Image (cartoon, rainbow, N blue to C red):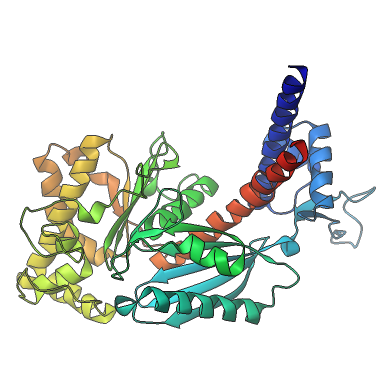
Length: 434
């Protein structure tokens, strides 16, 4: 009995220490090089705890000490007397992480060192609609192998791979269940890549990664402007309007997922029963009216039964916007239908949850202005007109840039929490106790 209690006490003590390691790494992740005093003030940890944990992290090669350069005043005198304060920072050579982004007709691989510096980026073109599982594996392996070879990561070994894809992924971040860019289903990306590279792998939905990037921005900056400020409970949504329609929803400061998958398939909520053909194969989805291919199809007077095109050139879609801005016609009607579909989806969400800011990504302000009247009429129809200011366009960064930012943050955070704090160290401790 005494032995069981003793082991429980050790386990709880170790878990607290590992949790504190994670807090210190997170502090350095978001604040660059800092003193032990600053770390203590930011985390609320005692000076003794900070000293002990940072010493362990230095011994493990995860962080390193740096001495700031001596700063002189305008007369050449030293501005600070005494011994220079030692600063701590993440050790860039501790690990390399790879972000693999699988989007329409493109695979992109980006490598980051542990400090978050980008050390390599490369893209590979392919036809995603024609992918077989064997072809996908070959493309992934060739892209990753080439990136790792070009970057020469021997001094800072690859420790993690984060995959980002359009569509639905499993809740445990292991597989791509469905994607609009390929006919492949239930692709176990984690096992595919782990078997070859022997590192941890996580799989993320692109829209949720975009939401994380914007949420991180809001943490760093209280608010850029009133239009994009978050609600007090930190709830907001990102709707990606592009090749398909995706949703990333932060509810009270945490990303919302389904019980088995990434969930929140905004584009595949029903808008009109038996309506236009969607890329998913069903009819009447919001996406079948509000995505780029749906707007293009309607604007060109094609039947709602027309099979969606694989892609719509950006310049051709931009031309549709310009024509619709000039006045009435099928182009204007197509954007009106898109706005009504968006409004229906938002009305459904606002009824289920309290109204929250919703930011449209991947669409221009001009296109949104064409959709806005019908979107607002739909909200008004459901008694939600007072929430019209919650809907806006996020045009500060492209969706690809936001995916890059969000994926790098997610992958580096995984290293902090699962490799250098909880996961790997806990396994070692469990082996010692057994």
